[in-house]
Image 1 (cartoon, rainbow, N blue to C red):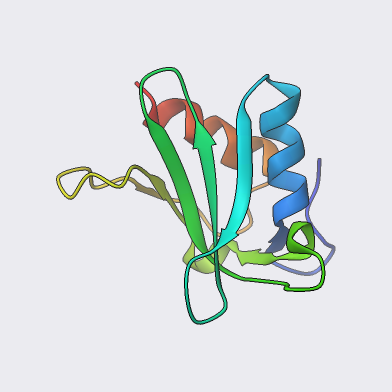
Image 2: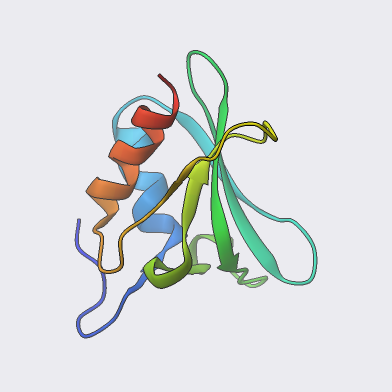
Length: 101
């Protein structure tokens, strides 16, 4: 799974595919103001990734920019992890598993 050429943008569909390929139930949801958030039901908790730009016509086309992407939980005490710019979908999926530890 690779992101678009010449860009730090990656679609929700690329991340969702990586998660579902590993047996994780997940979805992209509009969390207000056109913001996209990915939710994944992991073994220990729900892990989220965001923010992204929600595509109302096709949610899987929602775009996330790795210049400003966070993966973690909804727990206020969880600092989560900021995804390094240019990360691939596979690297983002691995961040979901790291956040579940």
